[in-house]
Length: 101
Image (cartoon, rainbow, N blue to C red; front, side, top):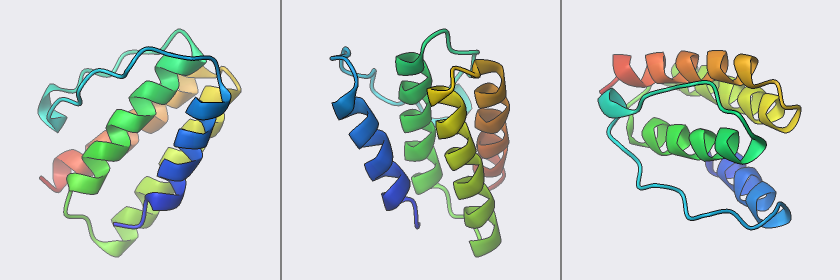
């Protein structure tokens, strides 16, 4: 899957930000409960978990492109503290992942 650049960007964001607790071990896609984050750190942790799920999915190229666009959008929403919009992007990516388990 072609998500390494986005993963690197998220890792840079984590490194540049305040020290955060180690993210919880990712859950399988069907168990990942998406709720609106209340902080940039929580939003980025959710983003990282979704990236992990997306990498595991067997998506077609056009689905990968759509997922990457949504993940980039979500990253921007997290940094802009637009958490409701980030949740919408998260749900869109998880719908793609669920369709390609």
